[in-house]
Length: 480
Image (cartoon, rainbow, N blue to C red; front, top):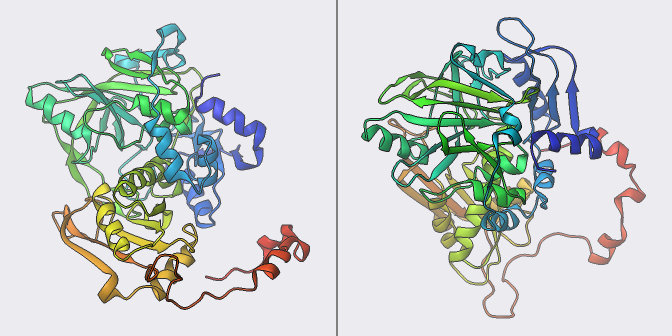
C-alpha cells in the first residue's frame, strides 16, 4: 500500500494508539488549536493531534478534520522514516542520496483528483486553515509545498513556504529571498510572464521530510522524497499546467494558480519558527485558479514556531546536510544534532579529537552549510550529544573563549533573526570549540582532569528498575 498521510495515521492508530490525541470537542481554527499545541509543547508532550470538529472563522463547522503536531516528536518522526532518532544525521543522509525516481499515474488513480473546483466554486476559507499567533493577519497555510519550475530547464522545485489565505481565491506568498522558488520567480518575471504554481498539502511524514531536502539548483525534489519514503512518489499532472508541474497523487489537496508578475502586497506580520513575530513586508501573491482534493480530505495543520515546525520540517534534513558536508572535510566528525531549543540557529557537532585544530575546522566548515546556522558547538565523543546539560557542561569546563571562540562578522544571515540590525541580511555568526585537548601522542591518554563516575562494575550492577517503580518516575520533581 502506498505511503500517504492516512496510511500513516492508520498505522499509528493500530500500533501506537497512545500517541494520538483525538479531540471530539469543537475547536476554533483561529488560535484555539494552536493554543492547545503550545500548552502541550510547554510540557514537552508531543502527541499527534486530530481535531474532529474544527470551527471556521464564520462559526460553521468545517467538513474536513485537522491533523496537527504530526511532526513534533523526534522519536515518532524517526520511526516514520525507519530510523534511530540518535542517528538521523548519518542515516537520513543515506536515504536522501539513495534516490528513487517518481512514477506517473493517471488522473483516475489519483485520490487528490476526487474533487476538482475552478472559478467561483473555489473557496479556500472552507478548509480548516489555522490562525496561529495573536498578530497574524489571518489563516496561514504552513504545510503547503509550493511547486514551480525553472522556465529555462523545465526542472521542477518544491519548497515549504508560508501562505496567507487572504480571500477565497487569493493568497499572500513569502518565498525567502535565497530560495530556489525566488530564483524561478525572477526568471518568469524577467521573461514578462506570471509564474505558474501548484501547492500540495498532506502526505506521509517521510514524504514531506524528503521534499524538504536541500538540493542543488535546479534539481527536482521528488527523487529525494522517494528515497526518504523508500518507495517511488506517485505523481499526476496538475490541472492547469499538465506535466509541466506534477503533483503527488496521494496528497490530500492541491491548490493551483499563478504568481502575477511584479505584484507585491503587504504580507504579515507572522509568528515564524524563531518564536518571534516577523514584521509586515511586501511579498508576491498567488491568484488561485483551481483546487483539487480528496472527498474526505484531512487538512494537515502546523504548530508554527513549535516543535511541530522544527523537528522534521527542517531539522532532520539540516542535520544530514551538515553531516555530509562537514564530515567530507573533517573525517573526525561523529554525529550532528540540531536541537529544538536553538530553533535552527544552533547546531551541536560531536568529534573524535585526535589532533589540534579539529574544533575550529568543524566550525568553519559548518557555518556555510545554511544561512540559518548562527552558533556551532563542538563537543567530545564522551559527551551525550542529545543531552543539553552535557553540551552546557562542556562549554563551562572545556572551553576558554579567548582561545576557543570563533567569530565571523559581516556574514550573510537568515533575515528572520530579530537581533540582526536592519536591513536584516548581514550579521555575526560563530562557534565554540568545547572539546578537550587531543592526546599528546598516538596511543597516549589525554592530559586532562578525569570525569566523575562510579566504578564501572558497580554502575553495571545497579539497575534502576530494581529500586524504583518506573511508573512513578514521572511523579518525581525535576531540576534544571
